[in-house]
Length: 113
Ligand SMILES: [Zn+2]
Image: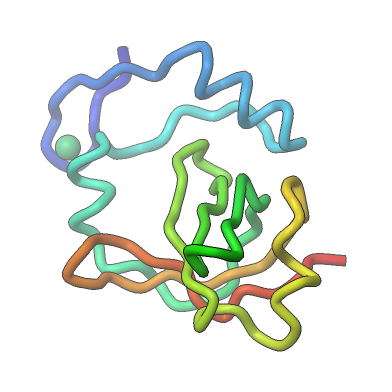
């Protein structure tokens, strides 16, 4: 269990979360905030590294695995330039994050070289 730095509540930092961070080449570090506090935070501007988890051409959206191990939604319109460059599973990307009515969303998604 990890203590949230914001609300002080305890939350689970699971083995799976650690493993997925490591698989992505990130350091396995517990997040500082519990999942609900993480979502409340207005994200800082700036590019973040992530990896495309999946993308559906049909639905025109997908998910990026973030450095903290959780997923973030992205829509085709949030991709910068050629969508096909970033949509294969496992593509390393940069993205920015914003809050929407439906929760956090990635935009300015582009390939990380
Ligand atoms: Zn919290």
